Image 1: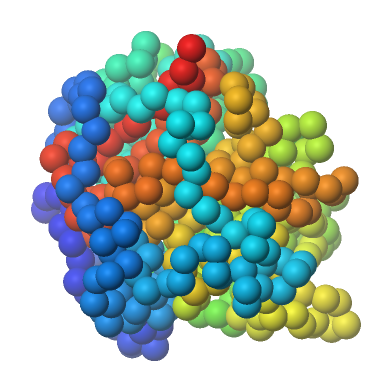
Image 2 (image 1 turned 60 degrees about the vertical axis):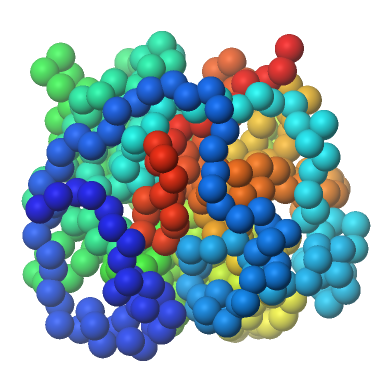
Length: 452
Ligand SMILES: [Ca+2]
């Protein structure tokens, strides 16, 4: 079986209709693990591409199909369609959580963009995460099941690790997040989140791997039986400043899982590096750190304050940026957008910012620490096909001062953004993930270098 990722119409239909998805997956059929073979030829490419329509043209496009896609999918194929201009979106927004007229995301001024963009590698196959090691190398995951490494700015052609049975790559599932141990230089531990098949079910798990002289080997399974399916697998993992491993999980289109604290689905989890449950987790004996999530895919801690933020795919648009508090309930599926509510006498947490009627499909994100954007939170967006920068304000960093949109439609779907040791931003495109329109050279690793 080839690992070529074709646009998957079955997935597209599934993403439109949760009930249909459940029926389809009720058969419990699990596809065989894919045979992984190297597809890409990383080469530098100086010029920008992108055959996609400019957003201004997309606004005008007949949008019935796009509107349907926006109905209940989160990584739909096309940029926002029939939404009103950004300046108008805030008019329906509540003052607390939604973008006000001043904070509604708007296009940034290109002359103020402090980076120059180059293609650092191309021919990638649905790259999902990129992280830097203390020795300057960068490790990169590709969703069909391989880990690759970049040395001295050049991505090596041969993967350093390939996943096999019971690994599973289907729909949005596969090899997703990767994190390096805070003490990687000493212990060579790395952690991955991936989908797998077991007893006819799709699940997700977190593994600890170890880099040895003979290659990367499995050390242990940290947590398993995280609900999975074709859609809504979550998948971001990152170490917090407290040395704990945080994991985002999706509700696999079973919204009730998000409100079931006994389920691992629709949660942010917090684990010790060996998989043990930290004694100071909000619910004793549980890995659950926060709940009421739909399909969160971004994690970032604000330097200085240590505050945790997460991006989340909403339904019917209403994608979210949340400020995460331990034990808090973020509302899915009880509330979305500007709605408020409570559960058991405790208020549900509204997002800091949501996308209203648009779909961003936000995924990886990070705080910038170098250059003119230091202090900003940057968020890669799939369906939005743009990079959003957010400036936070307030003593608790719980207000959005401004949100600006960059690279709109230029490179297609953006899966993740990572800051490199020199202050460059590294962005992974995802036009081969079954929901995009691949252009020549896709998928790509973009390097955004600070202008001198
Ligand atoms: Ca929410």
